[in-house]
Image 1 (cartoon, helix red, strand yellow):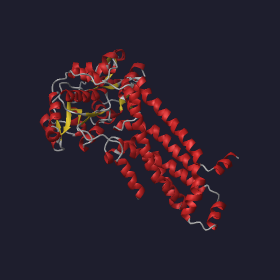
Image 2 (tube, helix red, strand yellow):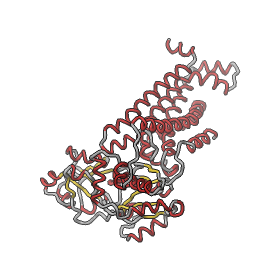
Image 3 (cartoon, rainbow, N blue to C red):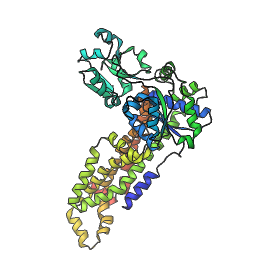
Image 4 (cartoon, rainbow, N blue to C red):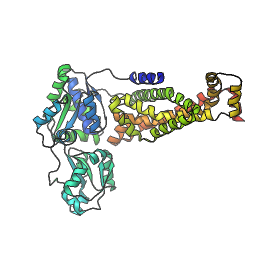
Length: 487
């Protein structure tokens, strides 16, 4: 029980930002740009605002807003009607009223619509005579690659397929990767956002929604109504952006980021008319991400040691109960890592805490299993000899059994640590930072340098951790046992 309390305290005391007004953004370029525009406008008006970037899909941002992990983010009215509030025929006034019941507010339109659409390469569409979504029904051989969120949304693929009677099966992939898949011919059709800069760049045709399936998707900011009392100046900042961004502006801003490879903060600052923030150098960014990554791995591994070592000892001392313990920890290891990260959000919100909790669960099996294996692997005659000497069970455990099992236990800890270093990169999807942040940004912007900025240090840290544990194992193993191992 004491170990669990210590673990919880470590998670609660993990590095976190002081509470301030925070705007979040989805894991796609336009969402990041709009959040940066809000930050730049706030800075221009003398309001201090933080930005939690690329927190994932719609549901993650929506829950974060409801729970107070963020205070505002950019959303679209069609998504509100169809996916979040499930009021497809609601007027704007009805949307505002429904949001108010949940303690949320909504600005008026920022000035542009960004609707869903399906698109193809123009040459391919012309060759097949496809101009509308209805025309797709005549070509069941077409390969569809759709963004993972669009595949599941109420206003996404299931509804489109039913409305148009489409026979094709669709595979899921990242939205930004879909454009490259279209260009290479790996897929024939994908979902688009109507403000995407890639549409003209890749010479794509947007298929006409001839049955008017997709609703109106006006861009707005959602915010917590409590801000009208606690931070009215920030609410005024959001209101000041109403009607200021038209479709041409948004396409141009998206193009500057995705095609010209300019930073979102710099693009947003230029649009608002303020000086761009001075970006940190690569070395400084890597140092920051290293600190975040080490915190995720270190806290989660420390919690796991406090819990897994006693569980491993218990499993070795009580074989029947041990099988249950090993089975349960084994089941945890089989769960998809991304799913575990998302499952932690309702319990811990977004940021480092849910990532630490998920990594903690993934660390249990190697440590429990190796502790169990190390203790049960001690020769029976040696255990009987220590018992015959009259040593108390606790003394036998600490002075004989654990030292003999140390190498095996450390091997399990090393395995858990190396796994954590790699798995922790997924924490960036829920706002935990670390090396996953530049990797996600690089994938979104098709920037190999950004991907390597996260991937190379992550690989280096994994090797460093492995080497460090091997050195620690050599130092901690008694000299007699080292000689025995060599023999």
